[in-house]
Length: 290
Image (cartoon, rainbow, N blue to C red; front, side, top):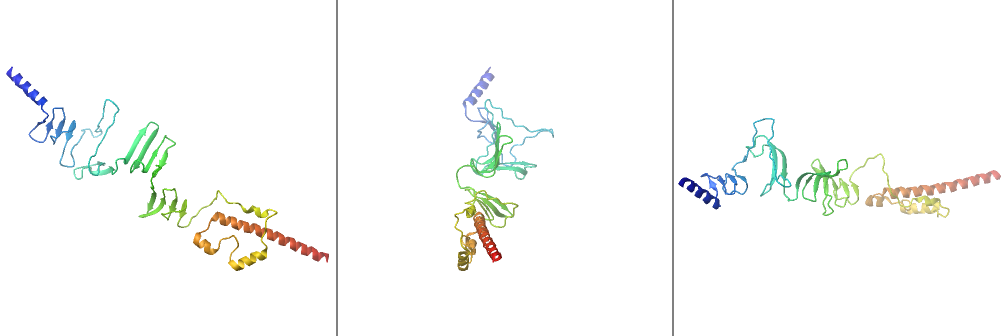
């Protein structure tokens, strides 16, 4: 009877104490049922503290089996891994981890921003898979229902001045600026597409023109006399309303405007040719009459 009373007193004393039981070393079991391995400062149901890379090993005796960790809460289930302090992150590896803690690296999740990292998420019919620096900057990803996904490289957030650069051969080769301008060979484009080099294509189509000079064939069009054309060419060394070589070298050539200007000159030359033909025909007729 005395032995039972003493045992009861010991249990009562331990239950009333906030101190853990210890095994004489660094391991402890608290009064709330928490277990510490390698530590007496236990702050989780199982708190393991090691001094080397390999702190916890889970092993199965069957070579074809999986080592499974299961989260089974009473409400909405989430399985959380937390890397806390410093440049936090996770490394997934294979092989012997004794040398570096992870063996041969397969994938790294290194988080330098609380909203960044690798996102693998499936919410109903709108899955999201993304690698991003923060919540607004997507490095690569896609989101949407199967068959109509939106594949994104770069940010779609309507903010900031982020750019997208493509590199090859150790150098930046192409850039998409924040305003949507694209530079190839020029990383500071001033037009929607700017190429520092040659372009080869089967067809180049200009979708929108200025006024097309078919007005040259209107009856009231004031056709410049050839003597005035001759006078202008002698004085300026280029056709009227056509950019000079100096202007083209300094400002470049607008293909649409240049083609329209040349078309106008061709149409004017056609009218001059028609007039010349009429004069020649009249002279020949006059000669036959004489």
